[in-house]
Amino acid sequence: MKKFENFSEWFDEILFNADILDNRYPVKGFAVYKAWGFKIIKNIVEILERKLDETGHVPMLFPVVIPEDAFAKESEHIKGFSSEVFWITHAGDRELDKRLLLRPTSETAMYPMFALWIRSHADLPLKVYQSVAVYRYETKATRPLLRMREFLWNEAHTAHRSWEEAEKQVMEAIEIYNYVFKRLGLSYLVLRRPDFDKFAGAVYSIAFDAWNPDGRVNQIGTVHNLGENFAKAFEITYEDVNGVHRNVFQTCYGFGLSRVIAAIIAQHSDDHGLILPPDIAPIQVVIVPILYKETAGEVNAYAKEVYEVIKSSGIRVHLDETEDKTPGEKFYYWEMFGVPVRVEVGPRDQRERKVTLVRRVDLKRTVVSLEEAVTAIKSLFTEIMRILEERSNSTLKEFIVDACDQSALGEIVKLNRKIARVCWCESVECAEKIREVSGGEIRGYRVDVEEKPEKPCVICGREAKRVVYVARAY
Image (cartoon, rainbow, N blue to C red; front, top):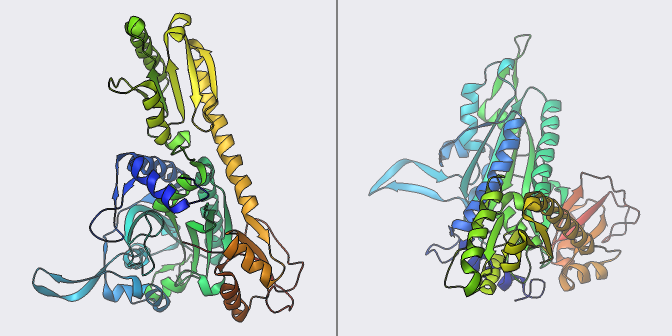
Protein backbone atom coordinates (compact mmCIF):
# COMPACT_ATOMS: atom_id res chain seq x y z
CA MET A 1 0.00 0.00 0.00
CA LYS A 2 1.39 3.42 -0.98
CA LYS A 3 1.35 6.28 1.53
CA PHE A 4 0.69 9.12 -0.92
CA GLU A 5 -1.59 7.13 -3.23
CA ASN A 6 -4.01 5.54 -0.79
CA PHE A 7 -3.35 7.15 2.57
CA SER A 8 -6.42 5.83 4.37
CA GLU A 9 -5.73 2.14 3.73
CA TRP A 10 -1.98 2.59 4.28
CA PHE A 11 -2.64 4.31 7.62
CA ASP A 12 -5.08 1.64 8.82
CA GLU A 13 -2.62 -1.13 7.90
CA ILE A 14 0.16 0.47 9.95
CA LEU A 15 -2.14 0.98 12.94
CA PHE A 16 -3.05 -2.69 12.88
CA ASN A 17 0.25 -4.31 11.88
CA ALA A 18 2.42 -2.23 14.23
CA ASP A 19 0.18 -2.76 17.28
CA ILE A 20 -0.74 0.93 17.55
CA LEU A 21 -4.49 0.70 17.87
CA ASP A 22 -7.31 -1.78 17.27
CA ASN A 23 -10.43 -0.10 15.93
CA ARG A 24 -12.65 -3.18 16.21
CA TYR A 25 -14.00 -2.29 19.66
CA PRO A 26 -17.80 -2.76 19.57
CA VAL A 27 -18.63 0.92 20.22
CA LYS A 28 -18.12 3.22 17.23
CA GLY A 29 -15.54 5.93 17.77
CA PHE A 30 -13.84 4.05 20.62
CA ALA A 31 -10.72 1.91 20.20
CA VAL A 32 -8.08 -0.04 22.09
CA TYR A 33 -4.59 1.44 22.27
CA LYS A 34 -2.33 -1.59 21.95
CA ALA A 35 1.03 -2.12 23.62
CA TRP A 36 3.38 -0.51 21.09
CA GLY A 37 1.12 2.47 20.47
CA PHE A 38 0.48 3.13 24.14
CA LYS A 39 4.20 2.94 24.96
CA ILE A 40 4.82 5.59 22.30
CA ILE A 41 2.09 7.78 23.80
CA LYS A 42 3.57 7.39 27.29
CA ASN A 43 6.96 8.53 25.99
CA ILE A 44 5.38 11.59 24.35
CA VAL A 45 3.52 12.39 27.58
CA GLU A 46 6.78 12.17 29.52
CA ILE A 47 8.47 14.74 27.26
CA LEU A 48 5.47 17.10 27.41
CA GLU A 49 4.84 16.81 31.14
CA ARG A 50 8.52 17.34 31.96
CA LYS A 51 8.41 20.59 29.97
CA LEU A 52 5.18 21.66 31.70
CA ASP A 53 6.74 20.93 35.10
CA GLU A 54 9.83 22.96 34.19
CA THR A 55 7.64 25.97 33.36
CA GLY A 56 5.76 26.02 36.66
CA HIS A 57 2.71 23.92 35.81
CA VAL A 58 1.47 21.40 38.36
CA PRO A 59 -0.25 18.08 37.60
CA MET A 60 -3.77 17.43 38.87
CA LEU A 61 -6.56 15.00 38.05
CA PHE A 62 -10.15 16.22 37.82
CA PRO A 63 -13.29 14.04 37.66
CA VAL A 64 -14.52 12.81 34.30
CA VAL A 65 -18.10 13.90 35.08
CA ILE A 66 -19.38 17.49 35.01
CA PRO A 67 -22.74 18.57 36.46
CA GLU A 68 -25.14 20.11 33.96
CA ASP A 69 -25.47 23.41 35.84
CA ALA A 70 -21.67 23.96 35.80
CA PHE A 71 -21.48 23.13 32.09
CA ALA A 72 -24.27 25.62 31.34
CA LYS A 73 -22.65 28.60 33.05
CA GLU A 74 -20.70 29.92 30.04
CA SER A 75 -23.22 30.41 27.24
CA GLU A 76 -20.83 30.30 24.26
CA HIS A 77 -19.16 27.21 25.67
CA ILE A 78 -22.35 25.20 26.08
CA LYS A 79 -23.50 26.29 22.62
CA GLY A 80 -20.23 25.10 21.12
CA PHE A 81 -20.27 21.66 22.70
CA SER A 82 -23.94 20.85 23.36
CA SER A 83 -24.35 18.69 20.25
CA GLU A 84 -21.28 16.58 21.13
CA VAL A 85 -22.01 15.78 24.79
CA PHE A 86 -22.41 12.29 26.23
CA TRP A 87 -25.07 12.61 28.97
CA ILE A 88 -25.35 10.42 32.07
CA THR A 89 -29.02 10.34 33.10
CA HIS A 90 -29.42 7.16 35.19
CA ALA A 91 -27.70 5.21 37.97
CA GLY A 92 -29.07 1.70 37.56
CA ASP A 93 -32.84 2.09 37.21
CA ARG A 94 -32.89 5.40 39.08
CA GLU A 95 -33.06 8.64 37.13
CA LEU A 96 -30.53 11.18 38.39
CA ASP A 97 -31.83 14.38 39.95
CA LYS A 98 -29.10 16.30 38.15
CA ARG A 99 -27.80 15.20 34.75
CA LEU A 100 -24.05 14.66 34.39
CA LEU A 101 -21.91 14.70 31.28
CA LEU A 102 -18.60 13.14 30.33
CA ARG A 103 -16.00 15.87 29.88
CA PRO A 104 -15.70 17.07 26.27
CA THR A 105 -13.02 19.41 27.69
CA SER A 106 -12.45 20.45 31.30
CA GLU A 107 -13.06 24.18 31.70
CA THR A 108 -16.38 23.61 33.43
CA ALA A 109 -14.92 20.81 35.59
CA MET A 110 -11.94 22.86 36.77
CA TYR A 111 -13.22 26.40 37.12
CA PRO A 112 -15.68 25.88 40.01
CA MET A 113 -12.61 24.65 41.91
CA PHE A 114 -10.50 27.60 40.75
CA ALA A 115 -13.15 29.87 42.30
CA LEU A 116 -12.59 28.11 45.64
CA TRP A 117 -8.80 28.05 45.48
CA ILE A 118 -8.05 31.59 44.25
CA ARG A 119 -8.49 34.30 46.86
CA SER A 120 -5.68 36.85 46.52
CA HIS A 121 -2.96 37.96 44.12
CA ALA A 122 -0.61 35.65 46.06
CA ASP A 123 -2.50 32.65 44.62
CA LEU A 124 -1.65 33.71 41.06
CA PRO A 125 -0.60 32.59 38.59
CA LEU A 126 -2.27 29.20 38.90
CA LYS A 127 -1.08 26.76 36.21
CA VAL A 128 -2.40 23.18 36.21
CA TYR A 129 -2.50 20.32 33.72
CA GLN A 130 -3.81 16.79 33.32
CA SER A 131 -3.35 13.98 30.78
CA VAL A 132 -6.72 12.29 30.30
CA ALA A 133 -9.33 10.98 27.87
CA VAL A 134 -12.11 13.28 26.68
CA TYR A 135 -15.44 12.38 25.12
CA ARG A 136 -17.19 14.02 22.19
CA TYR A 137 -19.97 12.51 20.14
CA GLU A 138 -18.50 13.31 16.74
CA THR A 139 -21.25 13.47 14.14
CA LYS A 140 -18.78 13.25 11.24
CA ALA A 141 -17.38 9.91 10.12
CA THR A 142 -14.98 8.64 12.76
CA ARG A 143 -11.34 7.87 11.87
CA PRO A 144 -8.88 6.02 14.12
CA LEU A 145 -6.70 8.52 16.04
CA LEU A 146 -7.80 11.43 13.83
CA ARG A 147 -11.49 11.74 14.71
CA MET A 148 -12.70 9.65 17.63
CA ARG A 149 -15.40 9.85 20.27
CA GLU A 150 -12.92 9.04 23.02
CA PHE A 151 -9.45 10.46 22.54
CA LEU A 152 -6.36 11.14 24.63
CA TRP A 153 -4.94 14.56 25.29
CA ASN A 154 -3.10 16.76 27.74
CA GLU A 155 -4.85 19.96 28.75
CA ALA A 156 -3.43 22.87 30.72
CA HIS A 157 -5.44 25.66 32.37
CA THR A 158 -4.04 28.85 33.86
CA ALA A 159 -5.27 31.92 35.77
CA HIS A 160 -3.53 35.32 35.91
CA ARG A 161 -3.85 38.82 37.32
CA SER A 162 -4.04 40.67 34.01
CA TRP A 163 -4.59 40.43 30.27
CA GLU A 164 -0.87 41.08 29.73
CA GLU A 165 0.09 38.13 31.93
CA ALA A 166 -2.39 35.90 30.10
CA GLU A 167 -0.87 37.01 26.77
CA LYS A 168 2.60 36.05 28.04
CA GLN A 169 1.19 32.67 29.01
CA VAL A 170 -0.16 32.15 25.50
CA MET A 171 3.36 32.76 24.15
CA GLU A 172 4.83 30.34 26.68
CA ALA A 173 2.29 27.68 25.71
CA ILE A 174 3.21 28.07 22.04
CA GLU A 175 6.90 27.71 22.94
CA ILE A 176 6.19 24.55 24.97
CA TYR A 177 4.30 22.92 22.12
CA ASN A 178 6.90 24.00 19.56
CA TYR A 179 9.59 22.40 21.73
CA VAL A 180 7.76 19.07 21.96
CA PHE A 181 6.73 18.97 18.29
CA LYS A 182 10.34 19.70 17.28
CA ARG A 183 11.49 16.76 19.44
CA LEU A 184 9.08 14.67 17.37
CA GLY A 185 10.29 16.04 14.01
CA LEU A 186 6.83 17.30 13.02
CA SER A 187 6.10 20.25 10.73
CA TYR A 188 2.93 22.31 10.90
CA LEU A 189 1.44 25.77 10.59
CA VAL A 190 0.78 27.85 13.72
CA LEU A 191 -2.42 29.70 12.86
CA ARG A 192 -4.74 32.10 14.59
CA ARG A 193 -8.21 30.89 13.83
CA PRO A 194 -10.78 33.31 12.37
CA ASP A 195 -13.25 34.53 14.99
CA PHE A 196 -16.05 32.37 13.60
CA ASP A 197 -13.91 29.27 14.21
CA LYS A 198 -12.43 30.02 17.65
CA PHE A 199 -12.87 27.81 20.72
CA ALA A 200 -16.28 28.26 22.32
CA GLY A 201 -15.81 30.85 25.08
CA ALA A 202 -12.37 32.08 24.02
CA VAL A 203 -11.34 35.61 23.05
CA TYR A 204 -9.15 34.04 20.36
CA SER A 205 -7.65 30.67 19.46
CA ILE A 206 -4.33 29.57 18.01
CA ALA A 207 -3.91 26.10 16.50
CA PHE A 208 -1.14 23.86 15.22
CA ASP A 209 -2.13 22.30 11.89
CA ALA A 210 0.11 19.42 10.76
CA TRP A 211 0.20 18.32 7.12
CA ASN A 212 -1.18 14.94 6.12
CA PRO A 213 -0.34 12.90 2.98
CA ASP A 214 -3.95 13.11 1.75
CA GLY A 215 -3.87 16.92 1.77
CA ARG A 216 -5.99 17.32 4.88
CA VAL A 217 -4.61 19.09 7.93
CA ASN A 218 -4.53 17.50 11.37
CA GLN A 219 -4.99 19.86 14.34
CA ILE A 220 -2.49 18.53 16.88
CA GLY A 221 -2.64 21.33 19.45
CA THR A 222 -4.53 24.49 20.38
CA VAL A 223 -3.90 27.49 22.63
CA HIS A 224 -6.70 29.81 23.75
CA ASN A 225 -6.80 33.16 25.52
CA LEU A 226 -10.06 33.06 27.48
CA GLY A 227 -9.85 36.62 28.79
CA GLU A 228 -12.37 37.14 31.62
CA ASN A 229 -15.16 35.14 30.00
CA PHE A 230 -15.04 32.09 32.25
CA ALA A 231 -13.94 34.12 35.28
CA LYS A 232 -17.18 36.11 35.05
CA ALA A 233 -19.29 32.98 34.58
CA PHE A 234 -17.68 31.10 37.48
CA GLU A 235 -16.96 34.15 39.70
CA ILE A 236 -13.21 33.51 39.81
CA THR A 237 -11.86 36.64 41.47
CA TYR A 238 -8.82 37.67 43.46
CA GLU A 239 -8.02 40.53 45.83
CA ASP A 240 -5.25 42.74 44.46
CA VAL A 241 -2.58 44.56 46.51
CA ASN A 242 -4.98 47.46 47.05
CA GLY A 243 -7.76 45.24 48.38
CA VAL A 244 -9.85 45.51 45.21
CA HIS A 245 -11.56 42.32 43.94
CA ARG A 246 -10.88 41.64 40.28
CA ASN A 247 -11.62 38.91 37.76
CA VAL A 248 -8.75 36.63 36.82
CA PHE A 249 -7.68 36.32 33.19
CA GLN A 250 -7.36 32.77 31.88
CA THR A 251 -5.77 30.66 29.20
CA CYS A 252 -6.11 27.01 28.30
CA TYR A 253 -4.33 24.77 25.84
CA GLY A 254 -4.73 21.24 24.60
CA PHE A 255 -2.16 18.80 23.18
CA GLY A 256 -3.93 16.08 21.21
CA LEU A 257 -2.02 12.89 22.04
CA SER A 258 -4.10 10.70 19.74
CA ARG A 259 -3.68 13.15 16.87
CA VAL A 260 0.02 13.67 17.56
CA ILE A 261 0.77 9.96 17.18
CA ALA A 262 -1.33 10.07 13.99
CA ALA A 263 0.86 12.94 12.72
CA ILE A 264 4.05 11.05 13.56
CA ILE A 265 2.84 8.05 11.61
CA ALA A 266 1.52 10.13 8.69
CA GLN A 267 4.55 12.41 8.28
CA HIS A 268 7.47 10.08 9.02
CA SER A 269 6.48 6.52 8.13
CA ASP A 270 6.92 4.86 4.76
CA ASP A 271 5.70 1.89 2.74
CA HIS A 272 7.73 -0.51 4.94
CA GLY A 273 5.89 0.60 8.11
CA LEU A 274 6.51 2.92 11.04
CA ILE A 275 9.46 5.26 11.37
CA LEU A 276 9.81 6.59 14.92
CA PRO A 277 11.86 9.43 16.37
CA PRO A 278 14.37 7.83 18.77
CA ASP A 279 13.12 9.82 21.78
CA ILE A 280 9.72 8.11 21.72
CA ALA A 281 10.54 4.67 20.29
CA PRO A 282 9.71 1.97 22.89
CA ILE A 283 12.77 0.12 21.61
CA GLN A 284 15.48 2.38 20.19
CA VAL A 285 17.86 -0.36 19.05
CA VAL A 286 17.18 -3.98 18.11
CA ILE A 287 20.00 -6.50 17.82
CA VAL A 288 19.55 -9.28 15.25
CA PRO A 289 22.11 -12.12 15.27
CA ILE A 290 22.90 -13.57 11.82
CA LEU A 291 23.30 -17.23 12.61
CA TYR A 292 24.91 -20.10 10.74
CA LYS A 293 25.02 -23.57 12.25
CA GLU A 294 28.79 -23.79 12.61
CA THR A 295 29.20 -20.36 14.30
CA ALA A 296 25.84 -19.94 16.08
CA GLY A 297 27.29 -20.33 19.59
CA GLU A 298 30.01 -17.72 19.14
CA VAL A 299 27.70 -15.22 17.39
CA ASN A 300 24.98 -15.57 20.03
CA ALA A 301 27.51 -15.02 22.80
CA TYR A 302 28.86 -11.94 21.02
CA ALA A 303 25.32 -10.61 20.42
CA LYS A 304 24.69 -10.81 24.18
CA GLU A 305 27.92 -8.92 24.83
CA VAL A 306 26.85 -6.23 22.34
CA TYR A 307 23.47 -6.07 24.08
CA GLU A 308 25.06 -5.48 27.49
CA VAL A 309 27.37 -2.76 26.13
CA ILE A 310 24.46 -0.85 24.53
CA LYS A 311 22.12 -1.38 27.48
CA SER A 312 24.69 -0.01 29.94
CA SER A 313 24.58 3.33 28.09
CA GLY A 314 20.88 3.82 28.88
CA ILE A 315 19.68 3.17 25.33
CA ARG A 316 16.44 1.14 25.13
CA VAL A 317 17.72 -2.00 23.41
CA HIS A 318 16.26 -5.42 22.61
CA LEU A 319 18.06 -8.61 21.58
CA ASP A 320 15.88 -10.62 19.21
CA GLU A 321 16.64 -14.24 20.05
CA THR A 322 13.52 -15.60 18.32
CA GLU A 323 14.37 -19.03 16.95
CA ASP A 324 11.53 -19.59 14.46
CA LYS A 325 12.26 -16.56 12.25
CA THR A 326 14.98 -15.96 9.68
CA PRO A 327 17.08 -12.76 9.94
CA GLY A 328 15.15 -11.38 6.95
CA GLU A 329 11.83 -11.96 8.69
CA LYS A 330 13.17 -10.19 11.78
CA PHE A 331 14.33 -7.24 9.65
CA TYR A 332 10.85 -6.94 8.13
CA TYR A 333 9.17 -7.21 11.54
CA TRP A 334 11.23 -4.51 13.27
CA GLU A 335 11.03 -2.23 10.24
CA MET A 336 7.23 -2.40 10.53
CA PHE A 337 7.52 -1.35 14.18
CA GLY A 338 9.80 1.57 13.32
CA VAL A 339 12.75 0.78 15.60
CA PRO A 340 15.24 3.57 14.76
CA VAL A 341 18.45 1.48 14.59
CA ARG A 342 19.03 -2.19 13.83
CA VAL A 343 22.30 -3.81 14.90
CA GLU A 344 23.27 -6.85 12.85
CA VAL A 345 25.78 -9.25 14.35
CA GLY A 346 27.14 -11.97 12.06
CA PRO A 347 30.19 -14.26 12.05
CA ARG A 348 32.45 -11.65 10.48
CA ASP A 349 31.28 -8.99 12.99
CA GLN A 350 32.03 -11.44 15.80
CA ARG A 351 35.49 -12.27 14.49
CA GLU A 352 36.44 -8.62 13.99
CA ARG A 353 34.54 -7.38 17.12
CA LYS A 354 32.46 -5.05 15.01
CA VAL A 355 28.73 -4.39 14.48
CA THR A 356 26.69 -3.42 11.43
CA LEU A 357 24.29 -0.50 12.08
CA VAL A 358 21.22 0.03 9.89
CA ARG A 359 19.15 3.19 10.36
CA ARG A 360 15.42 2.73 9.80
CA VAL A 361 14.92 6.15 8.24
CA ASP A 362 16.59 5.14 4.96
CA LEU A 363 18.06 1.66 5.67
CA LYS A 364 21.60 2.99 5.21
CA ARG A 365 24.27 0.66 6.67
CA THR A 366 27.51 1.42 8.49
CA VAL A 367 30.07 -0.83 10.21
CA VAL A 368 31.80 0.26 13.42
CA SER A 369 33.85 -1.39 16.13
CA LEU A 370 32.09 -2.51 19.32
CA GLU A 371 33.99 0.17 21.25
CA GLU A 372 32.52 2.84 18.95
CA ALA A 373 29.01 1.37 18.85
CA VAL A 374 27.31 3.48 21.54
CA THR A 375 28.77 6.75 20.26
CA ALA A 376 27.86 5.80 16.69
CA ILE A 377 24.28 4.89 17.65
CA LYS A 378 23.76 8.16 19.49
CA SER A 379 25.16 10.00 16.47
CA LEU A 380 22.69 8.09 14.29
CA PHE A 381 19.83 9.21 16.54
CA THR A 382 20.80 12.83 15.90
CA GLU A 383 21.13 12.22 12.17
CA ILE A 384 17.76 10.42 12.05
CA MET A 385 16.04 13.41 13.65
CA ARG A 386 17.72 15.80 11.23
CA ILE A 387 16.50 13.73 8.27
CA LEU A 388 12.95 13.38 9.63
CA GLU A 389 12.66 17.10 10.31
CA GLU A 390 14.08 18.11 6.93
CA ARG A 391 11.83 15.66 5.07
CA SER A 392 8.74 16.84 6.91
CA ASN A 393 9.50 20.55 6.47
CA SER A 394 10.20 20.01 2.78
CA THR A 395 6.88 18.24 2.28
CA LEU A 396 4.96 21.00 4.08
CA LYS A 397 6.52 23.59 1.77
CA GLU A 398 5.53 21.51 -1.26
CA PHE A 399 1.96 21.25 0.03
CA ILE A 400 1.45 25.03 0.32
CA VAL A 401 0.46 26.65 -2.99
CA ASP A 402 -0.55 30.28 -3.61
CA ALA A 403 -4.03 30.72 -5.10
CA CYS A 404 -4.57 33.98 -6.96
CA ASP A 405 -8.16 33.34 -8.10
CA GLN A 406 -11.17 31.12 -7.41
CA SER A 407 -10.35 28.64 -10.13
CA ALA A 408 -6.84 28.08 -8.76
CA LEU A 409 -8.23 27.80 -5.22
CA GLY A 410 -10.60 24.99 -6.18
CA GLU A 411 -7.90 23.20 -8.16
CA ILE A 412 -5.34 23.37 -5.33
CA VAL A 413 -7.57 22.08 -2.52
CA LYS A 414 -10.13 19.89 -4.30
CA LEU A 415 -8.17 18.36 -7.15
CA ASN A 416 -4.53 18.48 -6.07
CA ARG A 417 -5.18 17.90 -2.34
CA LYS A 418 -2.88 20.69 -1.22
CA ILE A 419 -3.05 23.67 1.17
CA ALA A 420 -3.96 26.96 -0.50
CA ARG A 421 -2.44 30.26 0.62
CA VAL A 422 -4.82 33.10 -0.23
CA CYS A 423 -5.51 36.75 0.44
CA TRP A 424 -8.82 37.43 2.23
CA CYS A 425 -10.82 40.53 3.08
CA GLU A 426 -11.99 39.03 6.44
CA SER A 427 -15.70 39.05 5.51
CA VAL A 428 -17.79 36.06 6.55
CA GLU A 429 -19.45 36.05 3.11
CA CYS A 430 -16.12 35.56 1.37
CA ALA A 431 -15.13 32.91 3.93
CA GLU A 432 -18.29 30.96 3.06
CA LYS A 433 -17.54 31.33 -0.64
CA ILE A 434 -13.98 30.08 -0.05
CA ARG A 435 -15.46 26.97 1.60
CA GLU A 436 -17.86 26.46 -1.29
CA VAL A 437 -15.22 26.89 -4.00
CA SER A 438 -12.44 24.89 -2.35
CA GLY A 439 -14.22 22.20 -0.38
CA GLY A 440 -11.95 23.23 2.47
CA GLU A 441 -12.06 25.96 5.08
CA ILE A 442 -10.06 28.95 6.26
CA ARG A 443 -7.68 27.62 8.90
CA GLY A 444 -6.34 31.05 9.90
CA TYR A 445 -3.30 33.29 9.54
CA ARG A 446 0.22 32.61 10.76
CA VAL A 447 1.29 33.97 14.14
CA ASP A 448 4.96 32.96 13.91
CA VAL A 449 5.66 35.21 10.91
CA GLU A 450 3.93 38.34 9.62
CA GLU A 451 2.51 37.91 6.12
CA LYS A 452 1.06 41.02 4.48
CA PRO A 453 -1.39 40.56 1.61
CA GLU A 454 0.04 41.68 -1.72
CA LYS A 455 -3.10 40.93 -3.74
CA PRO A 456 -6.82 41.64 -3.36
CA CYS A 457 -9.26 39.21 -1.75
CA VAL A 458 -9.37 35.96 -3.74
CA ILE A 459 -13.19 36.06 -3.78
CA CYS A 460 -14.49 39.64 -3.95
CA GLY A 461 -11.46 41.48 -5.32
CA ARG A 462 -11.60 44.11 -2.59
CA GLU A 463 -8.61 45.05 -0.44
CA ALA A 464 -7.35 42.00 1.47
CA LYS A 465 -6.57 42.23 5.18
CA ARG A 466 -5.07 38.82 5.84
CA VAL A 467 -3.03 36.08 4.20
CA VAL A 468 -4.77 32.87 5.25
CA TYR A 469 -4.44 29.15 4.67
CA VAL A 470 -7.27 27.04 3.25
CA ALA A 471 -7.42 23.28 3.56
CA ARG A 472 -9.66 20.34 4.24
CA ALA A 473 -9.38 19.16 7.83
CA TYR A 474 -10.04 16.16 10.03
